Image 1: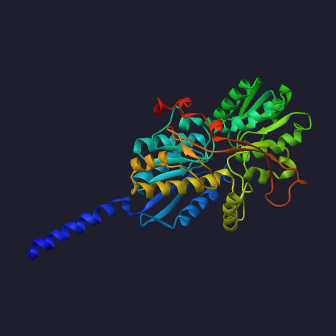
Image 2: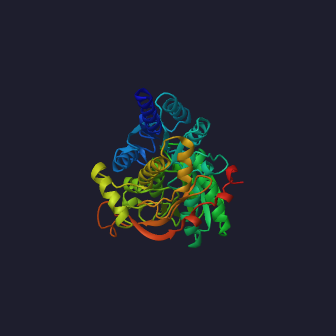
Image 3: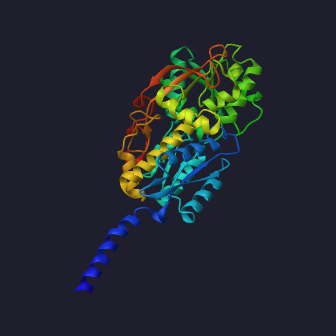
Length: 401
């Protein structure tokens, strides 16, 4: 009888321990931050997004379900083949559970597709194309910080409503640029404006002279820069040399963040209208995160870095709520759980994986208006998430049909 009792107790102990140990695969929750850390988007997200992810893991307590959280990182060099190679190794060899940030739309699309096949979660913060939650959506793919539709509604809509009804685009020659030009063009036309033309430039272009001359000769009221990062900085600086704004045309930075404004300086950037999903000086919540980030990095965060913190934190909350890091239950929780933090107030994830939240229309201050370092923006308008982003039923995502 004693032997039977001991055997029963041992079985009970096994039954108790096994589910707990099976909650987290490999006894570690690994999150990969995959982005550009050495090229045109190094300041846009880069190592600063990695620091934001590490901050989120630390603020969560360093553990989830009593297992350690590990942040791994790699530079994809803006090349989809390199990115998918890294992602495949992370999944197959290094046992990474989810990949996030994913600056560069062509990279994000490639990694999301691979992750769909591998049944792994991706949360995109740095890439903009609406195809991530549109025709190429994934049940395990989420889009967090912004997208080209939100930028088009914010910056494009504002300028048309204030008289900028003819446009010429200078567009980065890859998926992000095409998507941003297309979405903004649709919105401009819907508001009664016209698109007079467009020219495409290679990624990481140094000389914008021929592109700017074409934009200048078009006589369009607005020159839309459908690019980002160092490309936008180079275009704005050279536009100043060509007298684009002095000649009466308006420059629209369709994807411009605090990082690029800082790189340009207020003398060059003043008067630019832009749309972001976060600004460090909006309120106490946004300032609280920004001050911690600045103490750690020496700079203020933009919406990509703030969004990366938010997405890592929400993923960890979903793992805790699901009681496992298994993909299906965590993805279910990410769809179900509200997002309410310094980045997204009352945010929610739609059926296509798009997280909707308020976006903000800003104008860059003049040097005289700025009260000190990083005091760059004037808030012009808040754009509710329901207006800024496509409805799931309008996105073209097959999962919503």
